[in-house]
Length: 289
Image 1 (spheres, rainbow, N blue to C red):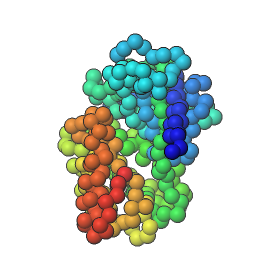
Image 2 (cartoon, rainbow, N blue to C red):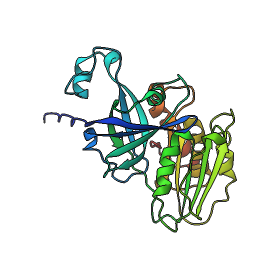
Image 3 (tube, helix red, strand yellow):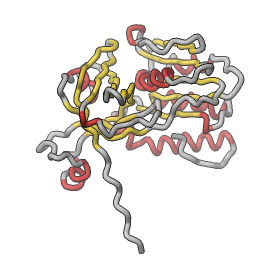
Image 4 (cartoon, one colour):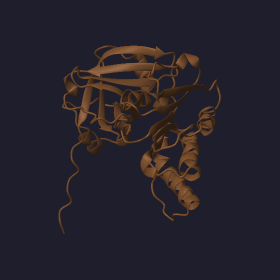
């Protein structure tokens, strides 16, 4: 029997807060820099994400920092708390990483940290992950999501190939939460205002009402899991779009924090895949994420 290979040590990056920008009443941008980002790169994905590591109450972080040692030698209650966030932009030359945080007062962890962050503060994180970018061969692009997907949508529009139109649907709470996006004659943006409604209550009907152009479409649909599931039904089951042309995933789920959502996400994905397989008559139950 061959000896089991040890899992490669994960690279933990350490960013220094350079500046904090209040983009909208509920969106805060934190720009990180410093030598601790010397090994960071996104590889060109426009949906790149990082796993932020917030220290748990306890004896403090070891120096030099080693996440594997922490998890091996300390009780779970002293492990760092992980939160997943999309990279809004990465400037390799300036070595600056921008991350946008939704902030709702004193609720949550990462948004509260971002609202109170000051230049010089440090933030450790893993990553990046991600694998989507607008395909140049697609005839047109569909991008739809809520506030949590807005950084990836904005980054994707900045990388949209010339001559490839995009229909963009972004649901936010109200007009004050709108942000400037890339402007081109062939980029059609619809801002949808929730105004206290349920996530997806404006977004799903708007996407359904779109008269899909002819040709090969690549779709990016992310945000709250329930409306993402509704739109996946539209794209895969009703319109029979090939799975390979879709990037569709729930970033979060109403009523769950990230820990609760991540713990249940695999089962959620299996149920979505089973529904899809039954509807399409494929008999296959594959992970839709």
